[in-house]
Image (cartoon, rainbow, N blue to C red; front, side):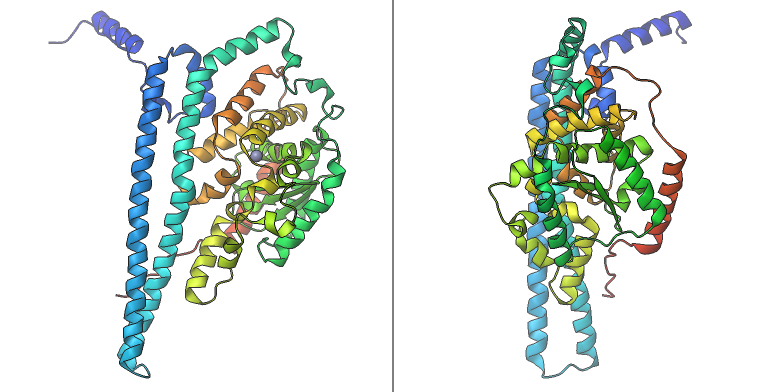
Length: 440
Ligand SMILES: [Zn+2]
């Protein structure tokens, strides 16, 4: 029997009122969506804490699974080496059948090394990042409602500019990052050292793309606290990232341009990097290390991996090229830790705003990258921009503090044209490492 329409409607309304979205559903939403939703949810602190514990349990299960996978792959590699040794012991030279068998074993070893490298990336980067995103989204759900009220109260009381780095009308004139000129040599040495190690992809060498990036970086730098000239450079790589080195060097991957949706997203990432340079985060974190070479890589063995000869070396090198610079660079040189990330989140948002861009550019790009299914494509970006509740809250707070400006620059015809040029260039010049098909 059909319910009368009015009653059906009533019960629908009741269901909508009682059933708040589950935390599982909420964590699939973007950071900007959560900011809209959180104040109306009234989530009990206990349910958030319980969920936090469940996330930690799931993380451990995933990591245990990867551990088992790594052991399996290492055992497989040992087995292949045993088979090669047996082949070598059986005769002084190969006959046709043996040569065929040897080629198959070499192929399987190459495939094994690519799988091992992928499983390492998953373990070291993709899995932690996925769970850290969930935890920082939980932080927003837990802390944003009170934070939002606090900010509204400070603005209403006339105290908005008393917050840390709240002197936004003095950008470029305030006491931030004094002594930047002393960092120029450090940044130059780092770039030269990277070149010497063959770790730096070549310049893209396209006038229109380089000119456009110089224009966007210049616009953001002019609206920032940077006192040294910004020196942008477009790198010929599909890696999705940008790196701000001490003293004004700004390395921009072609893959970043191709993956930004509009100019404000691209400008957002550049503004974040310019904030690290202006606030001298790299200098602050590298001081005790001293030598450029020591502070350049996460570990020198990483660089050595890139030079290992033979088929296995090629496999490693392919995996390395694909993951890119962000996977190997020392985070201290880039000035990345929890505290500096939060500060760069705040300052980058201010520079975007001051340059006339939609200040949500960085967060929007971040949200899209976090939602991507291909974790190896975003491993570099999230290693150098690790998810954390601190940066998310600092950025979102700044968005709430900044006075609204119209019109905000979101996109440009130049961006659309340069993005298409960059995509075409990448399509013609790069390919992902393909796992070999070994004819068993
Ligand atoms: Zn950063």
